[in-house]
Amino acid sequence: MTTNSARGLPEDALSEAKVADYLQANPDFFERNAGLLAKLRLPHLRDKAATVSLVERQVDVLRERNQALERRLKELVDVARANDTLADRIHRLSQRLLRAPDLQHAVDAIETSMREDFEAMHAVLILFIAEAQTLESTSRRFLRAGDPASAEARMFESLLQSGKPRCGQVRDSQRDYLFGKDTIEIGSVALTPLGPKGSLGLLAIGASDAERFHPAMSTEFLSRIGDLISHALTR
Image 1 (spheres, helix red, strand yellow):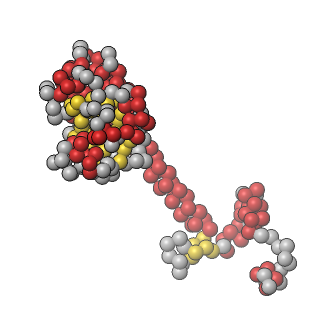
Image 2 (cartoon, helix red, strand yellow):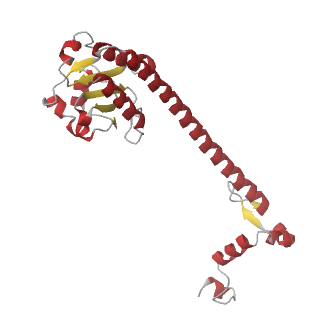
Image 3 (cartoon, one colour):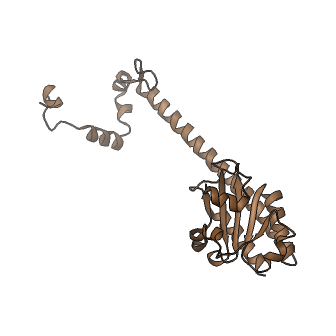
């Protein structure tokens, strides 16, 4: 026996959906039936033992919606501010690279920008170009000459072939190759291939926070940084 039958109602009595459709189509229903509105009582959202009027429930629902919208707005504002900050840092990197008269100064500009503009204390530039051997001695801490055919470089083969930045955690062997065996505090890394399919090399930025660079984050700005550096290296 259905609930409607038990109450003596016909099987085709109004369903909840039909009632909801009717009220949506007639929003002035309770204005025309004020007495019914006053009689309606609903369970309290936080205290299940208490009841509130329909108007009070509506106020609660609207308040929660407003709080949710405020949280969402704050998130959007925070993202916009972060993007503005990144855009400004990339602009400063661009200016530094434009002032670099040669490859040595371009590498110096990249290192300075990573440290001062992006506050990336753990950053390394691995280059596969011939000139890197000469430049390595003057900027050993930041720049390293690499061989794309070496076993170390092949650990990043899929990344280089994709030509797209990647963020997240790396294997211990990859971390040791990039930052040295004494940098166990690196928790996450942003990797940016340079040139078509990483033909020029790789820029790696490390962070102690394991969630600083995570796989779900946007890599659009990293791509722009990679493009700027790639053009500067091949001018």
